[in-house]
Image 1 (cartoon, rainbow, N blue to C red):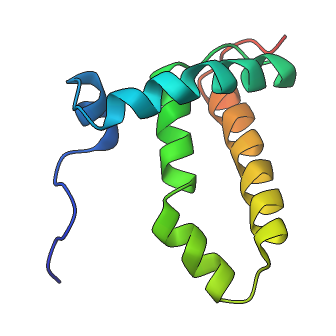
Image 2: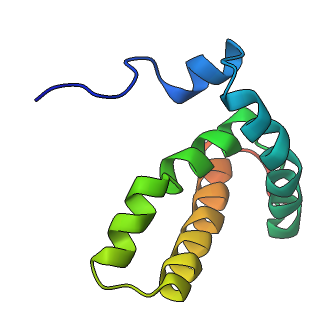
Length: 98
């Protein structure tokens, strides 16, 4: 199989200040922080961005919709999955929930 995407991981590229990721991180950091607060978990910082990136690749979202989910179903499931991922990540890291 041919690798078509970057060989470097998301967090590595984000933390090195890769140009196209910076505006994305700036736009998402506060909403993710607020979501974590609503869920009673601490701000996960870059790792929250990592989880968002893993779930919200536009190619995969379109693939999900083309495979039979409506846009509303895709949104509902992906947002629910992100919320679960944030809680699970915090719990696995033994970060006290509050």
